[in-house]
Amino acid sequence: MTAVLYVVSTPIGNLEDITLRAIRTLKEADLIAAEDTRHSLKLLSHFGISKPMISYWSGREKARAEEVMSALREGRSVALISDAGTPGINDPGAVLITEAIKAGIEVVAIPGPSAFLAALSISGLDTGEFTYIGFLPAKPGQRKKALERLAREPRTMVFYEAPHRIIDTLIDMEEAFGKTRQASLAREITKLHEEVLRGDIAHILDQLENKTIAGEYVVTIAGAVHQPGGMEEALLEIDELIKTGMGRKEAVKKVAADYGLGKKELYDKSLHGASEPGD
Ligand code: SAM
Image (cartoon, rainbow, N blue to C red; front, top):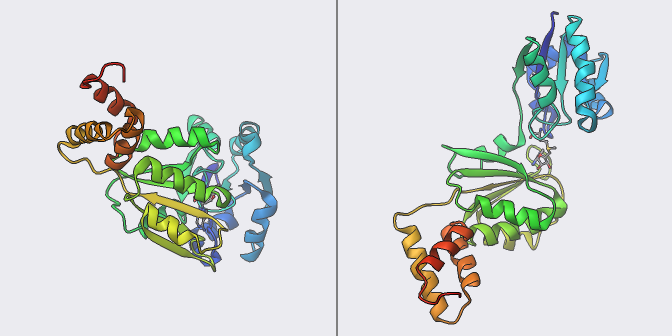
């Protein structure tokens, strides 16, 4: 084989999801660069593949990319794999791929599973336009801010989340996007305990109360619906809430979530038209 970097997708749970081309490429490559060599050995031995391996670990991605580049420069072909799914999608890969492209080395995709695409395809939400977000910040404050920034995003959004944070993240999503925003929660796709919950965020949270929280999750959220006059109506509603005695900040927060509008813009606009200066 000549120097080619193959970016090979591997199963996200069910080994039957590996493609024939992925097996052939892994068998024919001179070297396999794996996110975790021990983890990938199980997959490779299942398919009777025995090849020299090199660790391509995210903690030292730059240094590892250099090592893999040396092999490519020597004319060897390399198959890059991650622990599951598609390399470079919330997995190491980007540094090596960029370096290979810069060095004029051919980079070839061997496509296959990716959790976000599988989850999106069965979400029941609009797939015409979507945006992949991946993991939100783990710190609650940063996560809330990130979600607030996405409140007006009109495209379907796809998130990855760890099981120990899924409830908190959904609660934050409910606050940022509103209770009635449509969503889908896919768990353990292609695995034994595969399950998809669909409905509005509040309904999904209700359903989770009786469920074991474990495994891997993808959250898909419908984009914000912008109706003509949305801002006007939102400002009127804020005024109404203030008249009932609610503080401006609280009113803005509520209306921003219900209308899928940005809190800051709404706050500024509501102040601009406010009859009570300094409120
Ligand atoms: N490279 C992978 C891909 O292409 O999907 C993603 C790797 S990322 C480190 C791992 C995250 O992907 C998990 O925390 C989970 O959010 C999601 N994920 C991976 N496998 C999954 C599965 N079988 N079911 C649901 N989510 C999964």
